[in-house]
Image 1 (spheres, rainbow, N blue to C red):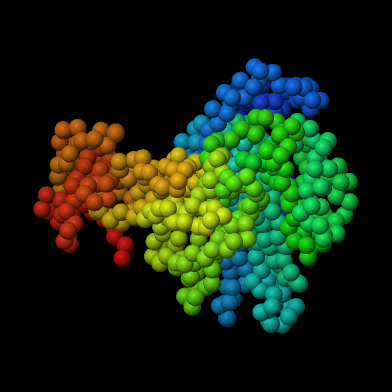
Image 2 (image 1 turned 180 degrees about the horizontal axis):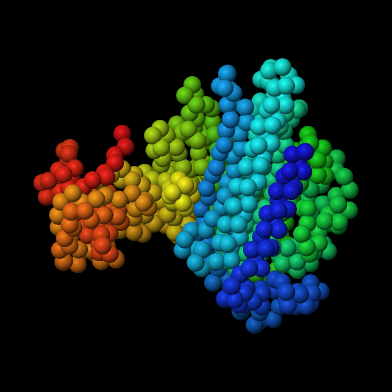
Amino acid sequence: MKRKVYALLMATLMLCMSACGSQTSESVESSATTVVESSVTSGESKETEASVSEGAVESKEEGKEQEQQKESVKMIAAMKSSETFRDWDSVTYDETAYVEYDKIYLTEEAAKEYPALAATLKSMASLTDDQYAAIYEDLLADVEAIKEDFDGDTSMFLPVYDTTELSIARSDDRAFTIASSYTSYSGGVHGYYAMSGINIDSATGKELTFKDVFKNTAVLPELVASALEEEYDTVFFVDVREYLMENITSEYTDLCWLLDYEGVTFFFNPYEIASYAEGLLSAKITFEEHPEIFNPYYMESPESYIVGGTQDYLALDYSDYDGDGSKEMIFISPGELNDWDCYDGFNVDFDGKVTFIPGESYYYDFYLMRVKDGKSILMVQNHLESDYAYLDVYSLSSKGVKKVDTFSGYFGYIAIDPDEYEYAKILPTDPSHLRLSVRTDLLSTLDATTTMKLEKDGTLTKLDNEYHYNTTITLTAKQSISGKGVDEAGNENGKTVKVNAGDVLHFYSTDRDNYVTFKVNGELVRFYVNYEYWPMTIDGIDAEELFEGMMFAG
């Protein structure tokens, strides 16, 4: 039952992607055409693709063109929102049912540059809301059925649940790939889980097909089957080659696959080619090992990039993660929970060598920066009480795990729909442009963001001089007050700006220690705040006498 629900969910998302792609503007279609002509992806490029698949050798001009493509690879900034609905028993207060699911969006800046992709993701998010509203109602019905069948003794069968966790596997101007992890349980002996990839053309917003990514799909069944047999030599499979031959087509396929920066991973979920007990199986075909079968356009990737983002664990397949010429596997997971449901640290398994990193956190977010020279940098976002979070950075190698840097900030949230209290979490994908949030307490307790660069050695370099607010909260002036004029670059321009009683002040930027800059009536005005002693003062006047609407956290 749940397996069918999952398959329907994925099929509907694919149809949504195709529909969104067909509704793009002429400018988007023009851009898509340029991509197709240069990358041999779809449409009129089929003839060229066929000639390449027959073994045509690239010319020197094509090689130069690919070098130009390589230089132009651009990262795309994204964010994620999460929804949770829970139900409790009115008598025992035990949890009976819940759904949890994620939605992916582009940032406002990225959406302007990639409108078709942004439209696809928005439609997928809306569709997911509708589907999970129906799933939640089904789960509540399952709860009532279980209560009736077992005369109220439901401890073995509740709660029932359905969850989908999303993370970004690739986010550049070639492809935007979402890794989807699905789990469900609606009563019975065991639940169901599945993994899949949602592969989207960044220019058109349409679903990528095998024919887009591979020059030669005829060799895939043998390559994938051999990889499975080598990795899982004790597993009893169905006829994998026949199964793959039936499913590898140029159109929509039941196969779950994911295009990332290193190649394509095929996922085989429980019951698909082996028994439930064998678990999730996967086979990765890499660009490095089989360059001849891939479209060169998708083989190009940035010099460094960030993957991960799933809460509480990070598992990465075999690759050369430390540049020593051999492949390793990484698995990062939390340690033990204490009496306060707080983890005592986390474990880093680097190719079989396990290192325990102590330190309390209620939950973790793990991210890995890959650099093409083989270096791997681990970022760990730690979450403590009162929503306090901070970021630690570690270098990873066969020699061990070494802490390199720390930052008293976190990947914060951007308001998508303030009226509905919907916020999306910033997802780090581009090491050269990390948008990190900090807590500020000048004139109100608010989040403000700064841009930082994650260097190849793991150190963090601040790129902004200020922290910029992301809030809809405003203050209102109670009396007239004058401040220093500021230009858009954040520099004081020598002017004096007067704020009148009743004017609305929008939080704009701060240095966290000395001043707050507001936007008032289209102008930027800066006030220096003294908070050595309470209350905070501006020019010796209590801030409470100057502004209405200030809010502070404990």
